[in-house]
Length: 427
Ligand SMILES: Cc1ncc(COP(=O)(O)O)c(C=O)c1O
Image (cartoon, rainbow, N blue to C red; front, side, top):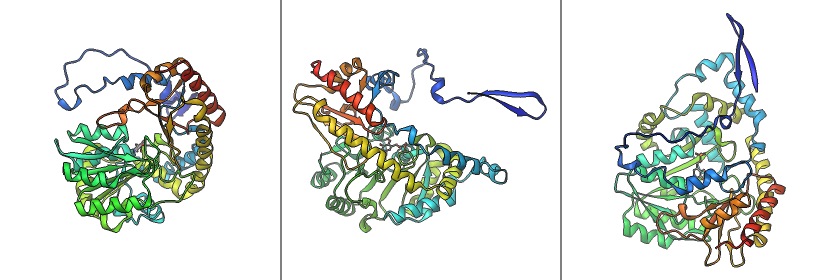
């Protein structure tokens, strides 16, 4: 879109093309450079997965590979109004200025009230605003992990949590899981064996599996980490996207773990990810250190974005929006689940999540999901192979599919393409 903006003193004003980031995706060949001296980045960027995911982004591909919320249900009108409010004459100067490392106080108050209402009693001074939960994971790594220290993770776990943990030189050690999430006895044994600095869990509608840690297991896990005196990192981006079953309290709400949990939340899945706005709930005692680390990372999360989210929380109805999102995504989950038996080869298994964005499947013996993806791409459909989600030994037969990005008719078309790909003999 091209627009002309009048500017005082400049005849005719200026012409600006309003563009999306995607309009400017220009591939450039890699140039030469002096070798990077930092050992932690050696080998980074050479992943086959990245190459494969680049293929899945081609416009003709129906991609279930990436966890993309559907942009058609972003609350654009209310967000536009929220930004207009944050840029109103009387507040624009302050909202475009540097602000506190911990985040804007009224936003911390509003988010603390939301968490408290969901059963996780939180005071505003226990919250730090992050630039997305992904930054929360980097801050967690900097706060809890030294080179050579260990963090326990679910097997499999969120791929992009492994990266910040490894970048600070920590060892990521997997703990066995089953249909109900991490296995408490395995967790206890792993703490005994590895003396970790922390345990990282995605207990609700996990990425990549969609699985949820049951209520009784939450209590067991809380007891174990409390008894062992280990930090718990609870990453919880999906809890509000529940389509069936009962709301479960976060592990961080248990009285016995107060003082040893870092709980991460985000606007990405309930609102929109491009805002890059998340939060971290930590014990008050560690806030001074966390705020110094945050300041070193990026001074603070964008002031104008925080102000817009605050205006949104005040003037729009986030709960009503989440209700809409839930209705839409629940239907998409059901459509994808219903198509699974006719899509994957006989003998495959998959999860039936109560919420979130992902299904996790396992192909029968003899299949390899990475090989399968190459054939699926020829049918113009994509998923993501499960291998990179494992901290250690991988299961090459697993794969993850995101069910929220497309409307039901497109999901059905994608599943039909995938079925054709599997019929074309994938092993
Ligand atoms: C488990 C988990 N943690 C963190 C993130 C990062 O979310 P954000 O967009 O808030 O950085 C994601 C995104 O997919 C996720 O699945």
